[in-house]
Image 1 (cartoon, rainbow, N blue to C red):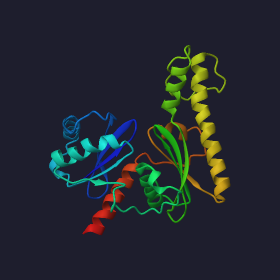
Image 2: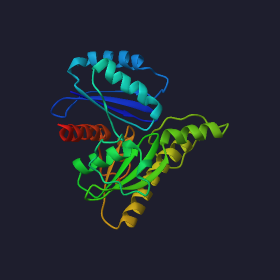
Image 3: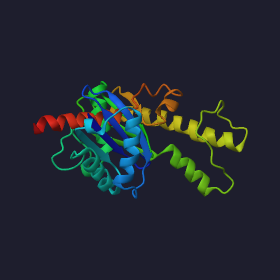
Length: 260
């Protein structure tokens, strides 16, 4: 089985795939660069045990991270608790089936390239991949699987926190879909601004990207809040919540084949 680790700015997601590529277990923990490999190991072993998974069955690991300071603990976790040397997306010699067409390829986050690779493999292109993470990203992939870059906007939770921190009288509010656009109280007005504001962002960016790209493009959404926003706009055509993890599975398979 394969242990796939997607380390983002807000959460680290761990998943175990069986030999057929099915997810046997998936767990997330908040990103904290001070967590040791032992802390992560104890936490992960307990959750795997609850799902009936033995750590000895894991014979491979792959990691993608946009937080370099987490790498030491994640590598140590794989080596100490699973006795495997992890494959690291972005390291020299690790192949990706995606051609990076951006001006500065080395600046593109590992998660965005993995998403592009998985989107091309599992969905027909050209594509716009919308990822609702710490940042909300829009990534452009053509019909040949080439990655052309995209858009990076502040994430929903980041925007909510900034609004609360910068305005003394504005409270923290939960993300939800308001029944009306016009809020009749401070809380409903804030919820409308965040929710319907992001719907407008999605629709506007998708329209502008399609116009600039000059061809029909399918829109795939991923990330924890993707289902919430997909239900509010026809701009999102499909939700693939495990896109990044499935991309990590593809990366591991590709490099295992090349090295065998």
